[in-house]
Structures are given as C-alpha cells and as structure tokens.
Amino acid sequence: MPHIPLQEDLPGIRGLVAYRPDTGRALYELAEALLRSESTLSQAERELIAAYVSSRNECRFCASSHAAASRHLYGERAALVDAVIEDLESAPVDAKLRALLVIAAKVQENGRLVTPEDVAAARAEGATDREIHDAVLIAAAFSMFNRYVDGLATWAPEEPEAYAEMGRRMAEQGYAGRFRQVAHAK
Image 1 (cartoon, helix red, strand yellow):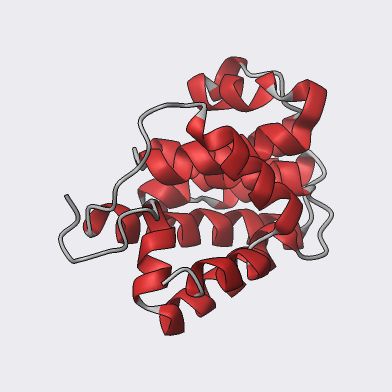
Image 2: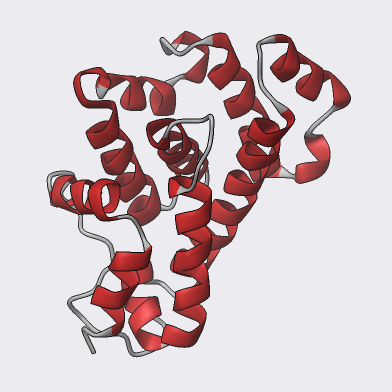
C-alpha cells in the first residue's frame, strides 16, 4: 500500500510521475539523457547498468522494468542480463562493461568506494572518461530513483511477464514519450 494516494493502475515511478508531473518530467528527462542519448555505450548496456544497480538496491519495479528493457535491446543475447544480475563475476560480458559494472556497484553502495584503481582498471579495458562518468551517473541516479520508488511504497507487479511489454515500450519509445503518456493518464 503506497504511503501517499497514487493512481492505482500506474506501478512504480509511473504513479509518482502522475502524482507530481513537474518533478516527474525532470526525472524522465534525466533517464532519457542517461539511457537514450548519444553514447559509445549501447542503450542495452546502459539499461543493464540501471537494472544491475536497481537489483542490488532490491527495487523490484526498477530492476524488473530496466532488465526487461535491456533484454529487449540485447535481443538474442538477452540471457546476458540475467547472468549479470545473478553473478557479475561469471557473467559473459566483455572486460570493459564488467569494469564499469564494478564501478557502478561501488557507487550504489557508497560513491567514495570508487578508487583510482577501479577507474584505471576500466580505462585499461578501453573505457573512456565519458563512459566512466556515465556509469557513475547512471548508478547514482538509479539509486535515487530506487529510493524514491521504494520510499513511497509504490506497487510493482509480481509476475515477471508483466515487465516484458513495459521493457519493450521503454526500449522502443524511450522516456520522454513515456512521460507524456503517464502525465496524461491522470
């Protein structure tokens, strides 16, 4: 049961965006910039970072929806998403993405845990300063999103299949278009 009255048919952050469209717009624009803008990291990789951090934060809605978006974007390699969430050490990801996910995990726990050695390791695997920056910002932003969603006790579908369509829409439409849909759902 949410801590404040929210529209019952809108799960997770969607209900919060409908409740406060003024702040929701800024949050969706941030997600759009982080996950959809021009980048040398693919959209699938950036959605995976968001899902991985959200999973570590135990935010069911964000972890499930962003994992579904990442799976959709990875296509035939969709199983990679679950492998990373289950065990990064044994997941079949390239060394650069693994190093960025290690940094993201440290940011999720406490940003001060990221060391010069972590950054050097990512650079040694080919990560650019922009990719390191974006991994840190995605991890920090999604930790905030997770705390927002869970701090107000929003509801999240229980069934994993409920997220497949949500992930497809996120992957194909992005977040700016999703804002217009949610803001007008009131």
